[in-house]
Image (cartoon, rainbow, N blue to C red; front, side, top):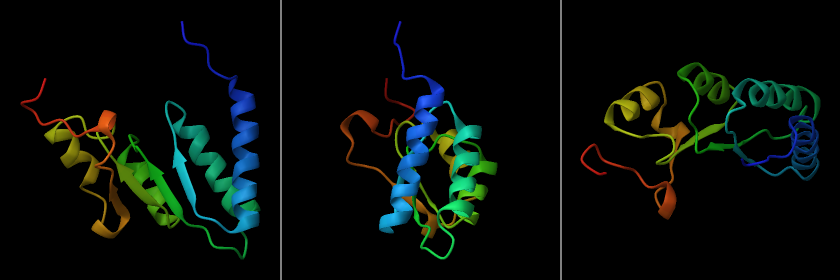
Length: 122
């Protein structure tokens, strides 16, 4: 069984990193797995708390959330990054990208282990 860092510690240090990004005015490069609701709430809180009057920009990469989350993130000015983890097949690609403008979408094509798999690949 794989053991992960406890959720409360992950959230504590994620918040510290969000604060640091606001202090140094750097864009966010975000990744979320199996914690979408907490992730979205923490991003919203950080935007209101830490980024007042500061640039709020970045990308949510390896995105595998819902269309509603796409809208939440892009409405906040963030970009969506997709790769093989995000897009498992053609129908997933169509659903995942139908509500994104091309200016909000980043394709990750260089990751060897996160490659796009066509319907014919095994």
